[in-house]
Length: 498
Image (cartoon, rainbow, N blue to C red):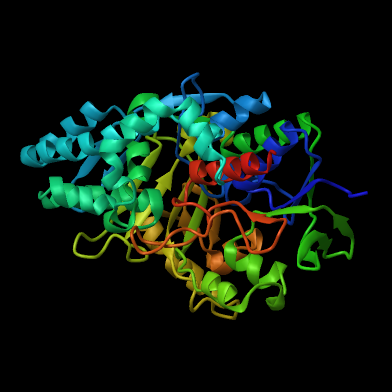
């Protein structure tokens, strides 16, 4: 008798969504997490009374009956929900020459662009119309209805034929890049930079590397559902998914590191933990990255050599520098929550340290910080190469964090004002590097997933050459955000349902 029907390695959003749905479908499921905290790159952690998001901080469609957010769809079927705080504008983009307020409602967003470039606003409207037409066709087919095998065909033909018909006029851009849509509609250099920036924030790649459906979905949902922050931070989403898993009889084991996926006659038989325990199951789903799955969880001889090498050669998005701060808040009564700072317009936005993302979620949820304080998470791209835990590591961390402090000064000018040799505002400072990310999340080079540009390859997907072994997470679907990871879990679970 098997210990379980399904073992899920890792409790990131993709793994938890797959585990929860399979438990809901009647499978015996065990999810194994190396860390003592579930959630993967979306987990929250607490230091001296401050609740920090480790990764994602921007959400829309977490509530509402008509939400298309895959996370919301999974929570619904598991019988769980979360509280949220809606807000608008969704953030501010700080360019060297000006600050731009970003509204979720698309007409108001365009009005802000019109203040800067009237001609650009007209071109932006044509660009949006092209993508929103695709969104209108896509939204009739909920992610929860999808599978990743041939059985999707009768489902679509039986239940979603009108939506498929709506999709026909948009087929030319379904596999195209956003850059191709931008090239056909937008010439204004300021608006083109704006589109590149939003694509980079969404996928880790600029417009010519980002697929059009990804941006179409973002534009449509942002305007239709608005933006909101989960009460309790990103950890609240993780807790709800864990509750859903356990509600339907699934189990989560934290501090349970999987050392190896076990095979017999080329088929999955279970896993072995770092403590030597063997857990048997005919199906294993890896929420580890493609590089970690094929490099560490399997032996080289377990995979066809050419397949393995091609998978390991998948290009990766760089890692990040992270700055988590707990600060005193007097004088910051008009602070807003989301900011993106571009330091130098002459440099590419993907240059490490040039584009900095800032989240101050205690603006909405005051319980994330002690009274009279705020919690801040700032981050920027940073390559893994060159980082070592040597005698110069701490000094290099502080030097690299300065670009994040400089970005924060656009929002909080006195964030670094010295008082007795240190900032009078900062009471907690945590600096994370690619090594931090790689260590705590067991992520290959601290990456956020594959950097596969539109038209230059397809994502590896959920399947593997090994019977019984499947994959979910940010190295299976385009996009580095929570919705893409959740969608990967849905597709895998639905495919294994029967």
